[in-house]
Image (cartoon, rainbow, N blue to C red; front, side):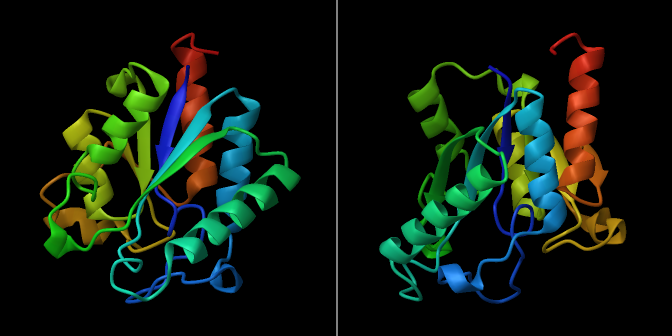
Length: 189
């Protein structure tokens, strides 16, 4: 199975600095995010979304609100021909709770492996918009891709990062085109 891991906010949907997407009405797709998902879908890649959503345990929105956002997001994507999302995993814990599932830790990746069987992480990608996504991807052993549609807006910002992304693209569409091209070159498609 060809798997791509994605962060949600800043990759698929808009990133809200110093805030959370607390209800469906606040959720807005990044147009290139939908395009990228469609490209991956059409090339036979399965997508697993891994996202920190500490706003739940901070009391800013409920697990029901988060589930409603997810259901609506998946429904909208299906309407646009994106049927390849295997699962959406969230960490709802705050940083202070020091759980194993909050990125940059790898608990949610390991949960995906429990649910879907052995995953060769070195043959997968994790696409995110922030340093913690890159660190998480490195920690679990994926190829890491940074997109500049969310928290990180320029390549200059990563100069001081401890962990550097393997690849940088302007958006998910460009990243997806790269993954599909790489897959063809390596005989995966």
